[in-house]
Length: 429
Ligand code: CMC
Image 1 (tube, rainbow, N blue to C red):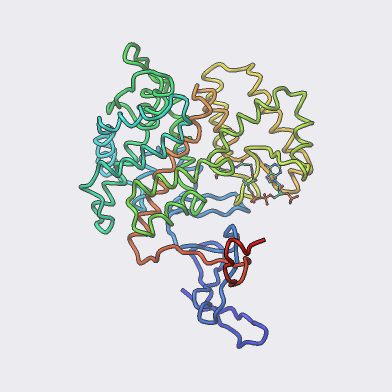
Image 2: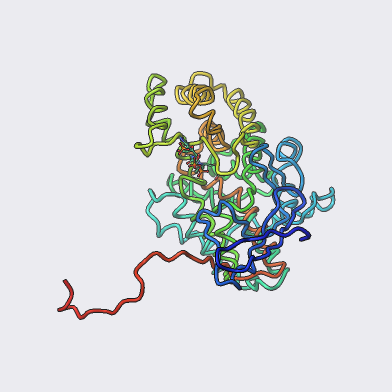
């Protein structure tokens, strides 16, 4: 794996030889693990130049706008696969054949209900609690229900925990929504597909069961596929880091949910709608574009830009197409907020500031619009991202535990006070 070497010249010290590692695709990586023997280490806040692990799950080429899951382009998965099939792929490395798929779908469906006792947790939250606050709590609380399968060293335990999480996330997400609405929580229906069942638990009530639109179910499924994994982003890295200490999978996923909540990560789809509310009208767009460019103004165009995709976000392309399908199905033509979003998209795409910095609409720009059109409140957007990303998180957690790993423990460049002596209170100025 390592034939080439890099040489590091440090003033006043002997040169250090560092192996260069190559992946299947992607740039070469300088292996700095032996650097500590020189009494030095690297400084890379934000991990812009650091690979924290080796992985076989997802590959991204940000410059070319490529996203592959186990080698398959995201566009092909979104077009020809479905979410549970994508889950199987991420977890196991290969797409299932018909028999494997039927078995996996049936296993997931066997685990869609949550323990009745878990419902009582909800009553501890205010009805106006943010759904992500409740999700952090109830997903972490799953640890208290599955003592039978918490041995992280046992592959079967890891497997069943993965299935339980994938199966129960839609149920918990819909329960959070129903709790906020004061409506009865709906039990899952295993005769429906994964996405249909989610929409059923969200929008049906015991007194009125309406059929689920296939177009909306397909859009929901696509949103799940497009958010399923994104290699070592902030929340996935959080899950790996938590898992590296030996924490149980439910606790690790709760940590991932907490990391996802931030507006620079999963909270962006919610922030897009909040921003559209703030802009209010097409006539204000110029003012807000100017604010986004002003370095003294903290305002940013939410849903634009990406840490990795510096050309375009391949997920955004599929999302835009799905967005058009959903708006046509729902007959939405003259929604002022959607009109505002489309106009903003057009203006920003043609503005030199955004073009020079390669700031294109990302997946969250369009997913926010679709979710709003389906009738999902903005406060639930990040919950849906968490639901979909659970498979990515758990696949990375499983991958890490299936091969030798170390507890994640970054170093630091200390710039605080050097050692000094404590003065008694009466002597301090
Ligand atoms: N609006 C205005 N200017 C921007 C924006 C934006 N949305 N994003 C980046 N810039 C500017 C930034 O000010 C900087 O300008 P300059 O070079 O003059 O200093 C330049 O573009 C490079 O930006 P950066 O902050 O160095 O880029 P980053 O890779 O550190 O940040 C980001 C990426 C996603 C945090 C950022 O683009 C952002 O905050 N976008 C809005 C939030 C958002 O939509 N996040 C969702 C990401 S997709 C979901 C996911 O995968 O989690």
